[in-house]
Amino acid sequence: MNTIDDLRSTLEREAEFDDVERHVRSTSVQARIRAVRRRRAGSVAVAAAVALVLAAGTVGLVRGAATPEPAEPTLDDVQVPQRIEMSGFPYELTDTQRAADDGTVTIEGADDSEGRVVTLVATGLGSGYATLWWGYYPVARVRGGEQLSRPVDAGPTELRVEFDDTPDSARAEVALYEPTGELAPGVASDGVVFRQRYGDRELVDAAFGHAGGDATVDVPDAVDDLDVSPYCHSATSDLWIHSEGIIGGVLCADVDTGNDPGAANQGYLQPQSGENTYTVYVTKGEDGPRATDVDVTFGVGLYRQTVAPTRVLGAEVLTVLELDGRTWRLADVLGASEGDKYEVDTSHGDVYIGAVYVGAVSGFLSWPGAPEGRWGGFTDNDQPEHPGAMYGPVLLAGDHTVQLHLEGPDAEGRVLVYRLE
Image 1: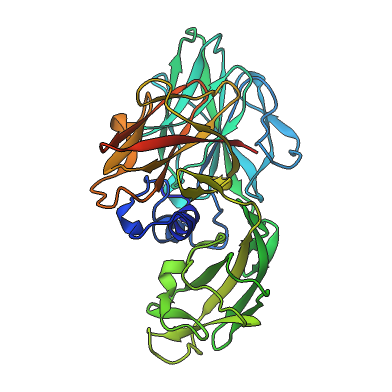
Image 2 (image 1 turned 135 degrees about the vertical axis):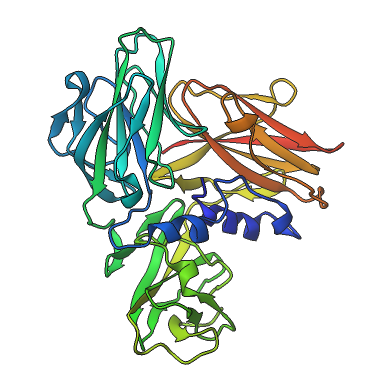
């Protein structure tokens, strides 16, 4: 899942690499803007393309959500909320779908509704658990009365539920939610919002513009820790967004990020020290005139990191991050308990896993049930003396062992464990 390019841009800026492109992140950290968000373009798309919210036997509440609307009965009269919230964006219940005998759940019309949220309800589990899969990826799990949310970055047409150590009476059903079109708190225009908070970053200022005009924000005195998030949407091709006073621009299609631009999708476009304002505008072609007769909406947001990063093995890593509609905080930095094995406590719910390394020429993360036995990684690192970081899976509750495989005579690593705020 390519879902947090903001993490990558921050790590590249802070992790003391000479050549950051050689330190390849796991698939969940790469190309958020160009790969995922371009698929979400549209005024009613949501920050998390599909969320998987699990419940068993009680009223289903998304973690961090507002008070739910009146609940609806579903499988075995389990109550699910009429309305839920992810990353500040509200959704409303539209349908339910029972899992087939083989565990598959086919969602009609999912390709046309990438903003859909899916809630899985599991009953009759006994002492076992139910795991929701999307292809090769285990994305969420239900045990007892727990409730979990697990977004994925595209609207799958088919999910699968697998039961482990459950009686034959175990059953599963999904409740489908669609975005209401309302936006999260922040600065908004034409169905797009620069959210007030995104992970460890807070919005400083944001503005929007239209054809022939500018979008200008105020710049505070200190600019070193600011991140820039430009946005541009138009049906016209070959439009470019430029920052006044900075040479070069960005193709509008590359920052056409749906309705949730995020906190830092073009980190190299930093405001200049001493400037009181920061202005963006749009041209026809990279070096062409300003676009005055096209239908285009563009804007820019400035974000500031409000939670200090943590230094591990010489690299700075984020203390708080947002992934798939949930906010995570660094809780543990683990050394290997046995060889390259790391024991992670998931008794209280899902955790998000990353790793920091130094002296390694290649490496990857793995855990029981990982796709093809591994998750992401990096290869052919010819600067092993520099620290690196990679971010991988959400480790589901019930999985306890992570392995960090590093190659290199002087390789040293630590596993980062993030828990829900």
